[in-house]
Length: 140
Image (cartoon, rainbow, N blue to C red; front, side, top):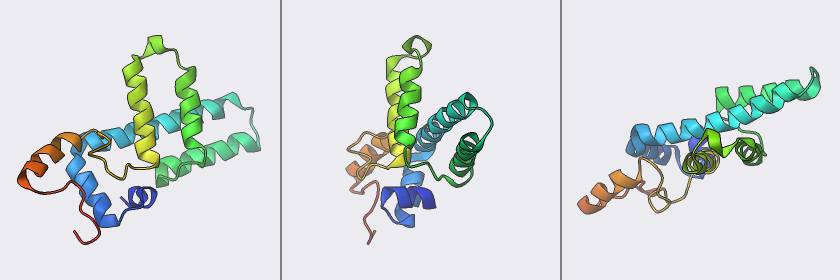
């Protein structure tokens, strides 16, 4: 929750609300984003011989998985991994969803409903009909 708040430029309460409102679908999206980055880091790590570069990537992988601290170039690394995977292994819409998951994990959308973020889109429509917003502002 803290990492989501920090990366999204939102308060801890707003991050908690986003996680609660998004439910399992939103948490799954974030998990896929993190896993896509982790897979890319692991691929890069395995391609290197033993040494300081490989160890640095191992530390970056540990930071990502244990503390939700992605490396600065995580989106590029994950994108390169997705680009290198043959589309025959995965439908193009799944690859696009993985890219969106990485983007949401790294920089949560300011307006997740408008961005069509999984888990928040459907719930927000019901809340909107009831007169509530998905993610209240600082006073909410």
